[in-house]
Amino acid sequence: MRLSLTMAVLVMAALPAKAQDLPPLPPELAGLAEDIPLGDWLDLVSGRTVFYRIGDDHFAREHYPPQGSTLYIEDDFGRCMEGQWTHIPETGAYCFDWPVGLYCFRHLRAEDDLLILPVTPDGVPTGSSVQGVYDIQTQPFTCDAPALS
Image (tube, rainbow, N blue to C red):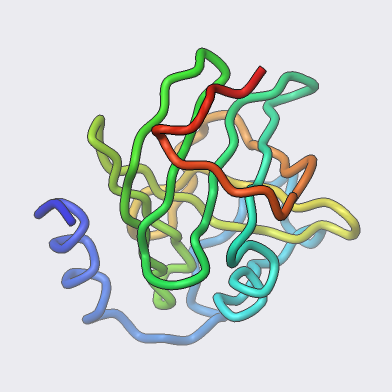
């Protein structure tokens, strides 16, 4: 795990851990979506591969091995990376430390949809495109596996 992720977690650990204190969602999601608690997210993804879209286009897939904080991502260009992730309950952020940088998101449920909102480590929306989860499969992959076709 790189220093940036460690520092973010240490800074966030000093904040109060109340759900009502989470940063507000953007107006288009306020009242329609709610943060997915860590236990519920783990129930969805542990040992599975999650497929993401932006709009109607495939964006990436991530595999969450059943134990630990290591995961793998492959984007729509076939680039594959191994990274580490952590959840910051004080801000609702799930942060991913990839070789190309630290990225944080809030995982949201809006009725039957799972949404991935880009945020800062303190849980504030960045304004970047919201991702949607369009599939979750049991088939694993690692970065030395064949590319997604």
